[in-house]
Every structure is written in structure tokens, then in C-alpha cells.
Image (cartoon, rainbow, N blue to C red; front, side, top):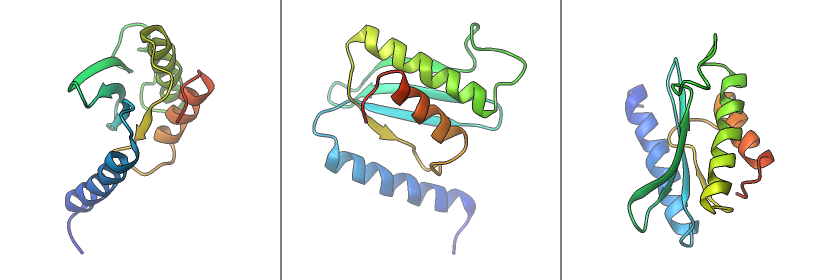
Length: 118
């Protein structure tokens, strides 16, 4: 079967392959989740640079809880707001090897509500 890390890497590679096929030059909204924080960044793979980023480690988002759905929602809204300011309207969602539920889903839905199209 494999270790947890190897299964995570397999999901991550499978997801990344699908993104490469369907991206059509759009920037990628990459999400990373740890036990304590959640991070999101919009990456232009053509240039190889990060356009905007947001995470719960920032001073204005640090609250009592940084590892729940409310914190993920706040990061999603912030990344959408910063993307609009940078002129990014459509992205490809990259969940990495993380399953699309819980905090990852909360971040994605908040980003959609904030105006990002994916």
C-alpha cells in the first residue's frame, strides 16, 4: 500500500498532472495546510514567480485559532482580495495532496465568493 507520505505524494503528482493539462496559461492557486496554519499563494508557472500570497501567520490574520475553518475562510477572502488588486481573475485550484474537504474546501469557497473564478 505505502506510507502516508508516499500516498500524499501520489495524490499530489496526480493532481499536478491534471492541472498542467488544464491550466491553459492561467496562474495556479496553491494551498498548503499544516496542523497549525494554512497558506495560499497564486503562482505564475510560466514566469516561475509568486504573484500574491496569504496565510494565517500574518499579523492581521493571527487570532486565537489559526487552524480551523474560520481561519481558512479568512485566508480565502484575503487571497481573493489581493488577487483582484494584482489583476488576477481566473486561476487553477491546486489542492496539492490534500483532500478537498474541511479547511481546504473552506478556503476555496471563500476565494470563489471573493471573486476568483476557478
